[in-house]
Image 1 (cartoon, rainbow, N blue to C red):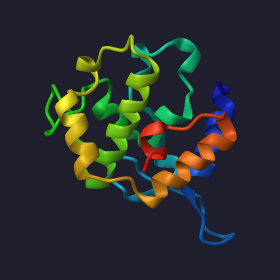
Image 2: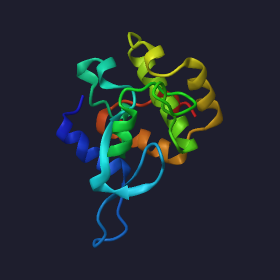
Image 3: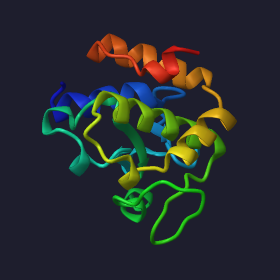
Image 4: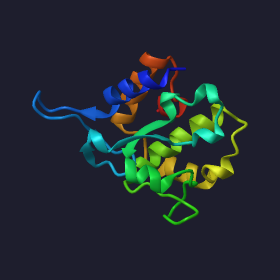
Length: 158
């Protein structure tokens, strides 16, 4: 796996936009799909890092850039169909499909992860079905393979 310092650089390459030389870097928030300034970015572990093996904490397949406040709001809350103290639902519909496929990848890759702490299987299947793989998701999957040598099979199969 990659070191944290390398991950930050790669995440900028994967998620950031830059219109011209005089415009500061911006990123597309993984949960809202809103473009924000880079100083608002925080690395989000979709499957919380406390649930995955330490050697895989910086797996690019499990990381999104999200707004700092949103990252703090979600914390280790389980994904669900509403926002409350017990569940978190990404605000943008495409993000729900992305989250479902990231969770599926991590649960498949690390079968010791207790899915009931991360996302209900019904929600995972529903979001995957209702919100299909986007071109941006395919692009990121290809780029992650170039950097890390692993695909998210739940994106790659489409």
